[in-house]
Structures are given as C-alpha cells and as structure tokens.
Length: 291
Image 1 (tube, rainbow, N blue to C red):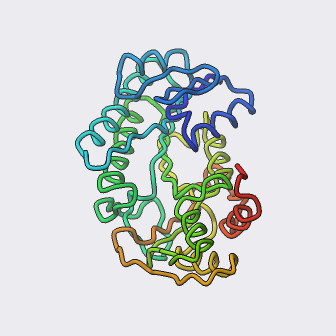
Image 2 (cartoon, rainbow, N blue to C red):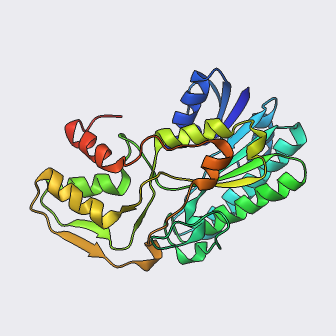
C-alpha cells in the first residue's frame, strides 16, 4: 500500500514509518521536521501542502499534533483545522482508510476501574497534555466520524501513554531524581494501562485497510494497570536510592484506566509486553543509551 504518515518524524510516527516500510509498504511522511525517504516538509494547517501529501495514497495515519502552551487559540485552530484539511483531502482523493491517533485523555480521570469506549468523555477534567489537549482531540475524533458518514473509512485510536526503552517520560525523570538522591516526585492518583510502543505499532498495522476497523473507536493501551506512585517506589528500591517519595496532589492529572477488550475482540489485538514498565526501568539502568 501507499501510506501517508503525518507526524512521521516524531517518536511514535518515526517507528510506525519504519514498521510500515519493513512490512513492504511505500510510505510518505508529512512533518515539520526532516525525515528520510519520501518526505514533504510542512504542517497539516496548510491545505495546499496537505492536498499534495495525500495525492495517490491509500491509507493515512494522522499522528501530527502541535502543542502551544499558553496559546490555546493557536493549538485548537492548528490541530482542528489541520485535521479537517486532511479529512477533506482524503475524501476528495479516494483514500481507503484514515486512522487518527487520539488519546485516552478524552475520558478525563476515571479512577482504577477500566472503562470501555462507551464511557462518557470529560476531557475538560484533565490537564494531561495541556488544558485543551483532550478537548481538541475529542473534537477531531468526532470530525473523523462525520467523514465516515460521508464515505471516508476512518478509525480513531485512543492511545494511553506510550513508552519504550528510549522514551520513559516522567519515569525517566524519576530515575534521575533517585540516582541524584533527590525527592522522587509522583502524582498521587496518576496511572493507567501504559502502552509499550511495540504494542501500539501492532494495533496500527492490524487496523490498516481492515474493514472491521472502519467507523470504530478503539482504546489502545497495555494490559497491566500501573500507579505512578507504585512505580516511584519501585524506582527508589531498584536504584538503591535513599530518596524520599514526594506525592503531589493533582486531581486534574488523575488515573485514566481503559479496557482494550473491544480491540481484542474486533481486530485480534493482544498486548505482548504485559507488565512492561519495570522491565523498561531496569533496561534504562543497565544501559542508559538504549534506544
């Protein structure tokens, strides 16, 4: 297949591009940052560039996203209208499948009970990713489903925090704090079913061109529920640090717990990494330059 990946120079996007090419697909990348191979430099906010990027492709993975702290108007406008540009171009050129990378943040904090895709969405209750991140992602999800009704097959993936050996996010910061003997900071109620990068790629490849995925919204996460505070304790113990754990109260960044049962049932997805976070911490400590 001929595939377009927006945001294909980013963390998840670059690995997706590699996986697609390894599977034998021809891949074009649209990104502000340079990428190898068939590459168009620019953003999704430019409708003329988007039309050029979508030309002759069968599948679009839309992963591009702009973050503008302190400028909510810019963030909403670029991402919402950029997604609209892609959807319009994809419909006009006969794209066979449009896959959108959304986020589990659209639910807002759920507590430890895993929720399915029918659960009410309250992105306004979460500041994970920024104050308008979940709100804008949910709006883009709904736009995709409007275009499904107009004849463009779409799939929305609500991804939960994606980690790998080369990308540990807040847990990498916790490790550095522990190694330095500083207080290890964690949000008291944060956590969820963090996804391993390889499992995310598996789901993306399972869905592409699959009619069972058309018009669907899927939670995309791991199989093990984590508490950030428990992982902070694990990090302190594993490093042999004498650091104290400092728990921060922030209900707007509370746990988001999601079920992947629908993704299992419909597409045969099975997270292969299981309880991956402790292993990633150990790998980080054994070789901090591991990618």
